[in-house]
Image 1 (tube, one colour):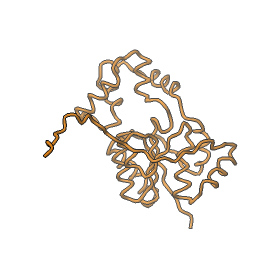
Image 2 (tube, rainbow, N blue to C red):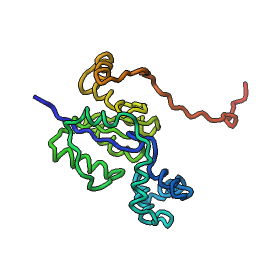
Image 3 (spheres, one colour):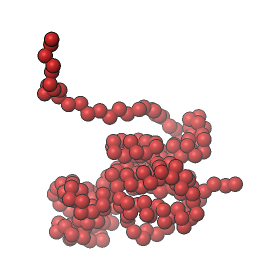
Length: 225
């Protein structure tokens, strides 16, 4: 029996290199974009990942943004290599019109809505993400025994995802899918890429240790007897 999977991917840093809000701010000369986003996060005014949407609607500096500005930003975003080929690999999938842009827990509802409408079991969901706005949906997919892939080494996301893949090529997200779902070994995966005229030149598998080391000079020391 043929099995069907639902593959859902975030965009910023997963398929591109740039934050669209940062590019927009730089293009229009709007200062302190990162500080604005950080303030929104501290105040919990919006869900993580929806900060730019809030700024476009409420911030005086961003209220002057028009459709032409957004189109130009889209042209300036530097995408990862081989996105077109990734789409070719997944050509049997379905791309639908964009109805909403959920963030945070809203992504959970969006993924579940797609999954239920398409009749896909929870253990056949694959989610690719890179930032804090993906935490809720990754935890949700993990609970359903799906596959979560981090495209960032940020600790808060890499520790949640079942797999982490770092590359400047969009096709890299296929590696854990071919391994975990299709059962391919490294030689078979290399062959798949070579059949598309691509060579996996470097493939390093390392375990990342995250440490916080502080000055211990203030520690109490017991006097010697």
